[in-house]
Image (cartoon, rainbow, N blue to C red; front, side, top):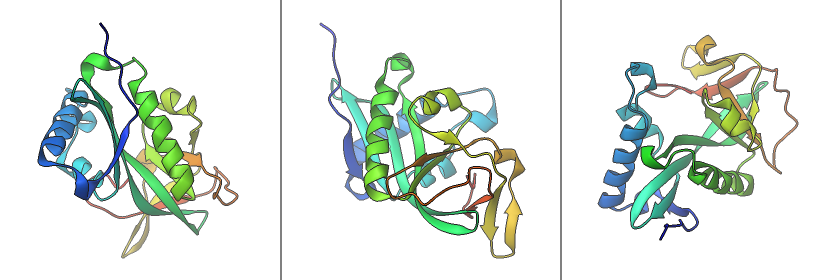
Length: 186
């Protein structure tokens, strides 16, 4: 008999149990295991995933897929945009490419559409997100620091956005900036 997951559960960071935190961390570190240090999950990456809403999909009492959405203020062409920034998207290694990540990301998109002017994330997995309605930001990227805007050219072409019913008109070729944070700023 095959197991079928239910819908993703939405759980605020503060409402995650210790067991759920351990299970999500284990899932993320396994899903991002790589010989390339740049592709590995880090403690900074985990910290970026906290403080918002977690989307947890379970099968047989096991967390098999996860994503989180945290609020950030991006500036698109100089205009502040309240953004649901997606972090820590992963499916258990044994269940990848079975539609679980798609299921979680559809719920994430619904949440972003209900609560934010824009969705955003950084990824090299463009085809997965494009088929779910995300667009690649084509303009140059920057980080806002106390010393002013600093270019982040390594991120150019890796930032994806999801328009919502609240989105202002956006020029995907305009500059975009994020607030500074430890670890990967995007």
